[in-house]
Length: 490
Image (cartoon, rainbow, N blue to C red; front, side):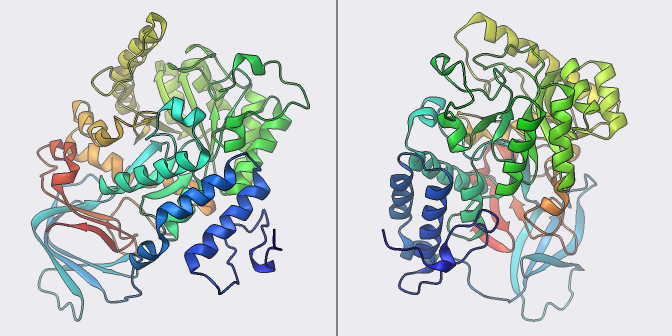
């Protein structure tokens, strides 16, 4: 193999920002050459080269480059609209939105001189912030578990790239990825190579042995000190850590790769192979090790957990985001409120969007979680806990198209504007918890001066309900991310 030019040699601390110096190919070729070299150096997994070459071939470089946003500083003005600004307050009339350089420059009154701005007439429709899913798995949502476990890595990432495009076209302009190898896809989206939402990546889910992120087969146990990593660990889906030292190492590895927050598994799950729903995972000392490492980098830890025991242990360790938590009791909810932690809930209601399990044990666990979901939303409001909206669609390619239905159904528990605020302004506040580790500088989930210009123009009145979200293909008339229009059927 020829020597790698100095400018594109992989360096673990700078691989996100390296640029190839070779002028013999397109910028896209240079980017993928760099990624290929980095993946070989870092992972060295069989099929990695084939996966990268498959991704390169499938993107058809010339057409992708031709679709990149033009260098055009001309401002844009959205007029003739009703404004939902993400705060949960009533709609506002008589407002126009001026956008430049990917940000909201100003909110103007109708009739203001707009100079040379490109004007988009919204036809009296509602303009709202782009939606934010606070519990998403970018690489794992649109593929079955069997395919994710057995397919070539390149295929898995190609499927994820296509699903990311569909996610954006559903009006979800940002996601908090809480587990999986999303760093490469995030980079490709940020560079404009593929379309998709902004990704706040957690990297690999950190799990104890036998925990919710232990995907090994029975024949891989016991694991010796010299045993190789499992395939899922090599691919960055999840990593196993036992003891404070290992938790520190795995946490720091994800931070090195660019995690904006850290995800640990602190309890059992419904679909788990080994860990029962009522199990408590990681000791308080282990959890605190991750919290301290994340805090040293200015960010926080989120944990998968359902039970009161696991929730309270996590909060004592300093965890700032409880993912799920449907089996919480009042004491745990009061503790969340007192600690100022976020409750990242999902409407698991054992309905048409639920997973189907063949065995009675998992169906019973699913029933318990569904009943707990109703109690959880009631207690979250009663004790004024900061509550986020997310979907946690996982290994369910048939269900990703219903992502926004998971938001519309929350009007069972909240009024529609409060519900919409949860998926915009409130989730934007949660994303801001990443502090200096946030990959995007600027406010999200809100329409105000200096916020990032992620906007939707919709056919529907959120003051009357959110049913229009059930058909985003028809009812989302304009989708903008960072000032770039990805869809316009006005």
